[in-house]
Every structure is written in structure tokens, then in C-alpha cells.
Image (cartoon, rainbow, N blue to C red):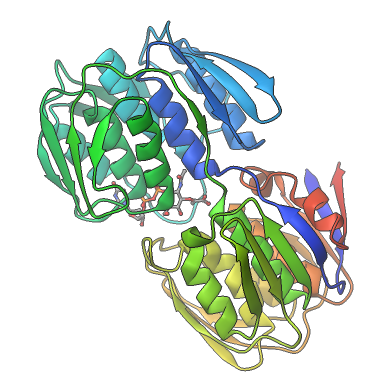
Length: 419
Ligand code: EPU
């Protein structure tokens, strides 16, 4: 068991540089499987989920070689199977985009199971409906997803919900199909835009970047390119909240401020001073207790569900009441019971949490249930009086690159321990 020991009560001060985005990296890695050549990716985050993703790609025939810090050459000239055995590996949700990519490259794909954080039922019906319209037949046998298509047929697809994973899969499956595909009600997350930018650089013809309607003219082949993965907007948001909750003063670098306007505006409402220094640098300081606030999570450009749990920690210490509505995943409030053990006053059901702000949180032994819940507990512990033990930090390390070191260099008293 790995854990963090945190002595709370130190305002964070200094600079933090954010790594590349986890949720952009995995779809872009999938996209390299469409290319017959050697792609170079830079700003790849150093995360557990990415290591697992590399293993899955290697099982399909990819050769992956690091050539600089956070930079990899991905040789996809010998992709020979779509049967991606995941035995011996932890299950990750990011593997979902292997479906669209390997279907397009090999014509069939089998993925034993999809994992990821237990934050809701997370079905893949929207993926499968869309892929069916592109000509794929799907079956699920003992939890394994199997897809097969003689040929990908361009199609006009409407998504019942702007699912991030389904949008990525349909882009990947259709960009080398013959003819024109339209995806309506597509996800607009910046990570989808990064995927589209990567593919267009490689020769794809995808129009409507960042909008709800994507038009894809199939091209015969894609060529290898070099691409820098976009900054992680969820890490950036988490560090902004770390500054606010500890009444600190942090400058967060290597960001793209356009990608998280909803978080910037909400933090200002709580009383934080947020100064966009350049579009790639932001300073957040807080001089008093945050004020209570209201948020409702929504697909981009709405308030991101991944930042909801960190905001719950901030709400716990706010002056006044906060109301947080979760509209994306139905099981995101498990963390409230751990925050309550630290002295928070949160009542919640599946979709809504009401938080009566308290003046102080107190150190406690708490258990991480999922990635963003883990971030929330770390933030609460940084602001709490006394010592906290955060157990099960493996989940945090799936999505935050060197979280403990980043915080420690800004004055946090945090130690990582392995039993
Ligand atoms: N949904 C369906 N059917 C589908 C697909 C989705 O009902 O076929 C539902 C889901 O159950 C959920 C909602 O639609 O209630 C949103 O799911 P979406 O498909 O948009 O999300 P995802 O692709 O499963 C990715 C990220 C999540 C992030 C969401 C939303 C990865 C690996 N995961 O998940 O990131 O919260 O998009 O932006 O890219 C995280 O990083 O901690 C994380 C959970």
C-alpha cells in the first residue's frame, strides 16, 4: 500500500509546471496506430495509465522507444493484431480508443475489458451504436468487446450524448474510411481538439474542430508527424484549487488558459485572485476563506466533472453553503464520506451535494476511491489542521505526474511512503 503523509496548514507558494494531458495522450496514442511509420510524441506525461497503454500497444505490434524526457518514438509499421490481450495488466478506461483505431487498421479488434475509475456505470452503448453505423458488428463475450468490419462505411451519426470516448472512437474509425462522415452532438473537450489537430497534421481531413458537428472526409493514408501533447487542464485546475484552499499564491505554468475558463470564473467567484499572465501561465492567490458557491458539472465547455471532487474540498472550508450538482457521472460523491471524516459537513445523493462550510478541517486517515477523489483528499489534507494519511495513492498516480514533489517544492509538508 502506498500512501501520502501530509502535515496540513502551510500556504502553498511558488511555481508549478503542469505535464501533458493524460486524456489527450491516450486517444493520440491510439491514432498513431492508424499510421504506417514512426510518430514522435512529446510532452507525454509520466503516469501509470500511460505505461499500461504502452503495454497494450506493444501487444498489437507497436515498438515504443523513449528518445528524450517525456518524448517517445512510436513505430507502428508492424501492427499485426487487433486482439489486445490485457492479461497481467490493470484495466484502464483509456484503452477504449483502441477500439476505433484497431478496427480501422486491422478490421477487427478484441479488448478483454475496460476499467477506469468506479464513478458510474460507464456503458459503451454510444460507442457501439456509432461504430455499427460505420459498418462494424459488435459482440460482448464474457466481458470482452469484439468488433469486426469488412469495410468502414462513411456515415451520418448523431450521438445521444456528447460522449468523450465515443467521439474519439468514431473519429479514429472514420478518418481513413472512404467518403464523408458527419458526427453530430460530438464531444467538444479540448482533448478531442488535440486529437483532431494531431490527425489533421498527419493528413486527415476533419472539419469543425472544437464544435458539436465534426465533418470527416476520409483519406487513404496518414503520415507520421511530431506532435506535442496539450497541457493537462485537470492538473492545472487542481493546482489552482490547491492555491485557493491553502490561502497560498501559486503560479501555474505550461497550461492553456482557454481550456478551463469555467474553473477560472468559478474560482474568482469564491474570492480567489486569478491572473492570466500569458495564455500559458496563470497566478492564483487567496487571502481569505473562500465564499460558498454553486456548480453544475457538464460536458465541455461546462464545468468539468473531473474538477468537481477537488472543488468539493474547497466548498468544505467555504464561508457559507455550497451546492454541487454532478450531471456527468452518477457516482462521484463517494469522496464526501472521507471529507466528512476530516470534519466536513456534506450531505449528498447520487447527483447533488450540499456543503455547509466549516472553519477548519482536521487531519485523518482517509482512503482514496478514485483518481479525482484522491486529489480532493490531498487538497483537504493540505488545508487541514494536523496530520493526514492518504491511503491508496496508486489511483492518484494514474493521473497526476509527481504530485507530491510538485506540492513539496511549493511548501507542502508531504511524504510519499510505500509499505
Ligand atoms: N456514457 C454512456 N454510454 C456511452 C458512453 C458514455 O452512457 O457509450 C455516459 C457515461 O456513463 C457517463 C457520461 O456518458 O455518465 C460521460 O462519459 P464519456 O464517454 O464522456 O466519458 P469517458 O470517455 O468514459 C473521459 C475521461 C474522463 C472524463 C470524461 C468526461 C478518459 C480515459 N476518461 O471518460 O476522465 O471525466 O471523459 O470528460 O479519457 C479522469 O481522468 O479521471 C476521468 C474520469
